Image (cartoon, rainbow, N blue to C red; front, side, top):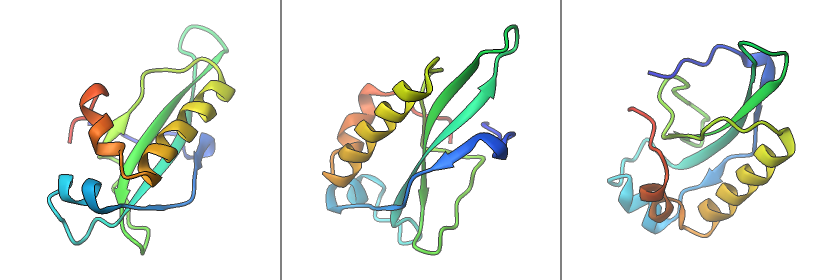
Length: 111
């Protein structure tokens, strides 16, 4: 289980509507209509350096998100700008209805 422990360093992008192919992959769940992509920063355990994760949640148009169950969590990224670039890459996949076809290549979060 993934807990959102640090709201202070949580930066979300605007919601993205889930397109047809991705919606079918999600088993046409009516309560899931949008993707939420976010960056979350974590203070280093042994250093003062921060690491970042790009996280993808499913949500709906009322912005109801279960922050404890993301669909995808990236590995640690040591540079904020690289994390932003990766979030943008995932955003393009979502907007082009290609995110779920990209998922098998990614590490899926435990649901």
